[in-house]
Amino acid sequence: MIKRVPLLILGCFLLAAPLHAQDGMQEKIRMLEQQIQELKILQAQQAVGRQKAEQCMKAVGRDTFCSCIGDNLPSAVSFEQYIHTMVTSKEEQGYSAMLPEQKKLVDDTLAVRGKCVEKGFFK
Image (tube, rainbow, N blue to C red):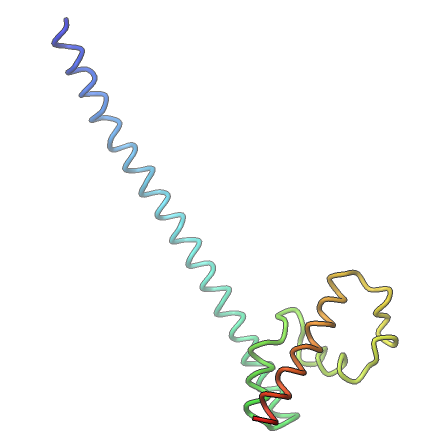
């Protein structure tokens, strides 16, 4: 009986090892799937950025400026919204009544414009 206990323990360990390896493999698969999803999101964001830069080039025609706009404008802000934000005062936009997230988009858009003007026109 004493000899069977170590063999029984060893047998249980050997049976459990493949299950543990499967758990590790499943975790690796989940991580890879997450990375693939993140890459798809990044590609979509880059495509949107290129579209914004192309629209900017049609309107402004300054490559460095438009590349900066495409790369840095918040993803939730289209080029048309960017133009609207630039030509409409905060008061006319109803800034004081906006939700904090909306105010942040306006503020971030204005900051991007300042950054891109400096980069695209003065360097």
